[in-house]
Length: 547
Ligand code: GLU
Image 1: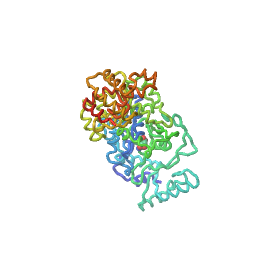
Image 2: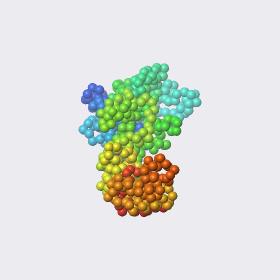
Image 3: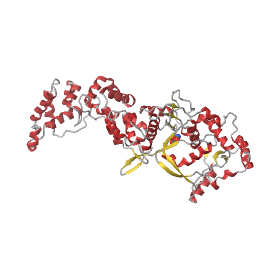
Image 4: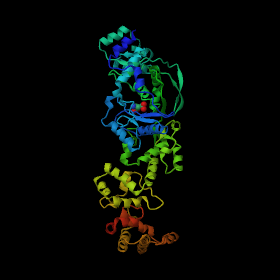
């Protein structure tokens, strides 16, 4: 068969460059030895998830700890799944978590020498190489219709055989020259398939950067490389793009591991040295007693937007993911509580080999700790950013009074003392936590544990005694006085010695006042809260707290 003629008949484009030319258009990168080139290659579906961030963080760390490059490529070959604004959303979401690309789609960088970074704009490169493979007898046209392929699949399933296009099932593999031209003359649509040279009789060992040595079976499937509309499949685009964008380490989800033999065969057919691969394990969660994969349908926490809406501190999400990526990060953090996570020596081979557990509760703890390290001013900025994007109009009005919120935060975070409070775990919860400092959002949530008479007596007497000029101890002496008035023990030691003698103690009296003033039985220092609220408002709450 005249293969050159065939390649011209199948890919008649006159504007293609010769495959060799691409080697000089995209030369090997001029980087230090050991520098890794990594990429994030999402499809622009508009759904950016935790797995993307997990991978991106590994990519970014691997590149930037070795003096390499981390770039963004958009895998937009599937037009149907494309969503407007999805690329900007990937960049914005990752930037929120402090992850930046060095080059790539929509990245303003002088380094953008390996583009275009959108696969749809790279059609000529794929077609040039598909043509070469046809001319070499390593690829061929397939005219099978969807119905024929379905019938084959059904038959294979019935026979309990591997499904796909291979061996005797690869009908178009052995079409004669005459048959091919006859189909072309009839304008029958066709795809281009790889003519696999592999055999499932052969196994080989492959070294994955995360999973270590893995024994796999050679590929024998004649996979599609160009679809009937001339657009490449993921397999073909991956081999060509990662070669010409000079990726040295492909970090991707373990769902791609089963296609690895196809990818290695494609690299061989194309004459490329394959990159190193690192297949990451899936993110899992505990569901009752069982561990399962995070699912788009069931778990809102899979979406990255979830973390922004709930207001987790972005650095906390990154730090928590670092512990999931490299389990020794936690130990490093303990030794370097104020260190920059970028100083930790991230190692790709220390990543978990199977099912990484993602625990929202742990993330909450990390988020609390990170927020507690902020100054009141920094915390204000963080909460304000959330309020601007997700808060109610009332929240916005509250946050317009920066001075007041800073006073509140100084108290709620304990910034004046040595021991910081960890009451704020995320922005949404933090904003709601301070609702009681404003009349329009103040609500009594907890119930008094005493009868009406006692409650009213405590609140009334305390209101009579309250003087905003009192310091903490004078304030507390007055609570004691009120406690004594309703028959509560004024000293805890007395109460502990003879609990049966009293109906309550001074801390029960304080709790009644606390519920009236803050709406809740738990709060930071009540004396300071009342001074922040001011005399008038405090007295109003003491009056309105009566039952
Ligand atoms: N577009 C592929 C995906 O989103 C990328 C896989 C890869 O990183 O190679 O799953």
